[in-house]
Length: 80
Image (cartoon, rainbow, N blue to C red):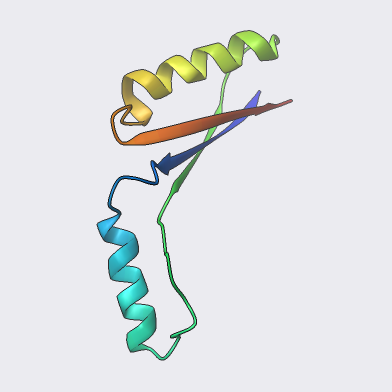
């Protein structure tokens, strides 16, 4: 099954990468931009036929490795 994991830094946590990108955009003349946040997307192929079980497995992967539970939230989407 195809799985997409979207990992977002929690809104109350500073995003230094987003701040750097926003500053660079302004330096390039794109002053209309603000509040830039840099998130991550992970694409996985996971063996299994049960979407609920695959989602639970990937959520466990997120809690153990893919996302930092102190700083980040994640969303798992399973497609066939």
